[in-house]
Every structure is written in C-alpha cells, then in structure tokens.
Length: 341
Image 1: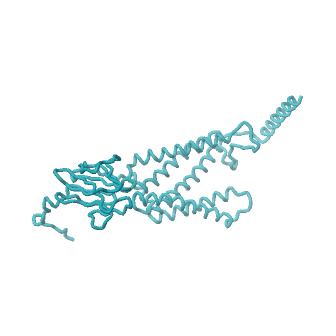
Image 2: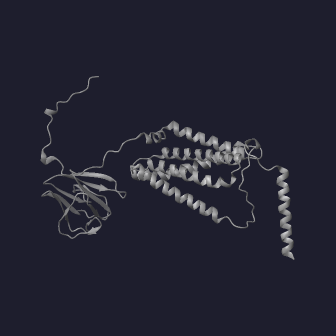
Image 3: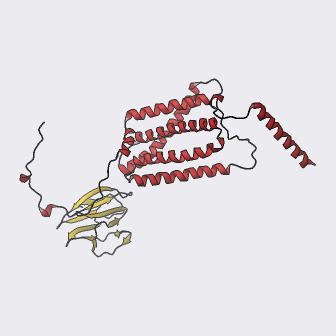
C-alpha cells in the first residue's frame, strides 16, 4: 500500500491572530487538567455559571458572570465582575481592580481552580516507556487475570488441605475461597475509585490481578520460610524473615496498584509504596511485641512442625527431649517448694 503524500505548500497556515496565545485550564481537586479553552488576542473571555459565558462552570459558589480575561500588551488581564465570593490568586484574595495573571498562576473562584499557561510554556520531558513496566501490562490481559485467580484458589485449597487434621471436605473450604474473593474485590474497588478520580479509568480487573498475584506470592513465601527454618533449625529467625519479606511484598503490591491509579513518576511511586510498607510492617512488629510478656496463661511455641524427611540438620531425640523436660519439671517443683517454705 502506497503511503499518502501531502503537499504541505498548498495547506493554508493559520493566521497569526488566530493562534492561541495561551490556554485557560480548569483543574480538578488533584490538580489534573479537566478542560482547556484557548486564549486569543483581542478577544475577551467571560467566565461564570450563566450560559452566555465562554467558559461555563457548574459551581454554586461562582456567580452567573464572575470574571473576564483578556490578552492585552503581552499579558492576560483579569477583571472581577463584582462577584459575591471574589477571586483568589495562589491562595491570596485580590481586590476588585483588574490585575495581570502570570503564566502558571492559579485562580480560585468559588470551589474551582483555574490556571493560565502561555503558548510558550515548556512542557515536561517525554517519559521513556521502559521495559521495567512491561511486566505490569501483562496484568491487563484477561487471561492473566483469570489464571491468577485460579492459581490463588488452588493454592488456598491446597494449603487448607495440608493444615487439616481431620477428613478433608472441599465443600467446607469453598466458603473461605469465596470470602477471600470478596475481600480482593473490595480491595480492588477502593483502588478503582482512585484510578477513576486520577486517571478517569476503571482499572478494576488490573487491581484484582495485583491482589491475586500478591496473595499467591504470600502463600509461596510463607511455605518456603516454614520449610527453610524447619530444615535448618532456624525457628528463632522465622519472625524476622517474615517481617523482611512482608516489607518487600507489601511495597511491591502498593507500587503496582499505584501504577494503575496514578501518573506520578516511578521513583515517586516507589518511595511512597515502600514508605507506607515500612509503616505497616512497623505497626505489625509493635503489635507483636506488645502481645509478648514474661508470663502468658496460653502457652505459645515459635516452632515449625513438618514431616521429619524435611529435616536437614541434627536435632534432639525423643528420649533427650523428655529427659530435659523432666529436669526442668524437677527444677520448677524445687523452686515452688522453696517459695512455700
């Protein structure tokens, strides 16, 4: 197919007076532009709620005819039309007299924020769509989303089966799978609202995939740590390993959710995600330490039980264990007898 060639010499170029000298932008609460109207020389822009304005804003705190803007002498002149709630520039109230609005300054009228940008305003450099984000795009595929849920459900049922000491009934485990699915949907719903506000996109299924993948990895690393500490007799570092990997996993999950809900730079998302992860893990550690004491009426054992075949280091025999227990019991009885005397 032959490429279409255009004769640009015959294309009519716009007249200088028709080119916008800048744009008046309407910002939402997050500072994102939701509307732009061109500002042209020798033309006045009327702003208000009435339908005869050039920019109509549906804000009950804005007057029907609130203000006018006009490009004059290489500057944009703003005139308040005796509005009820006045005009604020960068957080400061201004008088009724006309004033000049500089490029980048924000106007606050009612509950609405306006900003002027000149045609010569330099935009931010184009971001590089790097390969580091290519993996996240896989989460947008329906097949990946369904597969992640099926893997999580299967792993959850397997974990439930291995932890069951009685006869296993899959029908009794299904309600827990449904409950897990409901929790994931609620989690994804909250992130979807954030995506809708920030990006005007409903990334519900992407956030579901992130949650499914995160829970799947959580099950795997909990199993891995349990078998690792059991095999090498390292039960004393089990809690420390769980906190460390939880910090990494929570940070990655938050980063992936923020990726689908924000346009911030990856470095900013990483700082925010792992900062929140550090706070969450810190609170978990504080709660765990607060529950520990010198004495507890419910005995707790920070040990892992697995099949003996997984034990890779030497350990006490049963005779040695009971002999040591007998020695400790005799010692306790002796101390109790002394205290009674």
